[in-house]
Length: 105
Image (spheres, rainbow, N blue to C red):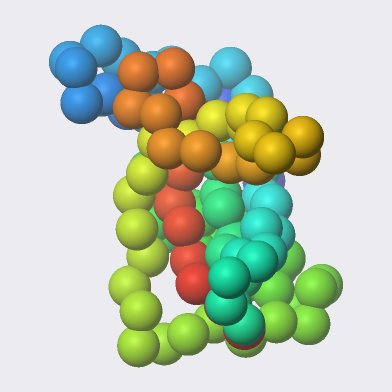
């Protein structure tokens, strides 16, 4: 896998028309879903599915989870917020960062 820098990442347009310019390289997070048996891999700071897939595969092997092949990745805008006294990722197209979301189990 090639090393990527922030200059390789293209700006992403928000739903309101403003541009998000990444200042850091993409980051991956495994986010469990409390209500189901599934979890999600979020690749933050990009909407480039090819870059996100490379990084998500590395995290999936590390965490011992498998991709759900029947579910395509979703492009979302997310940020961390406090809900019920816990930090959780919430959808926020105004202040969030771009992310590619993969469902895993």
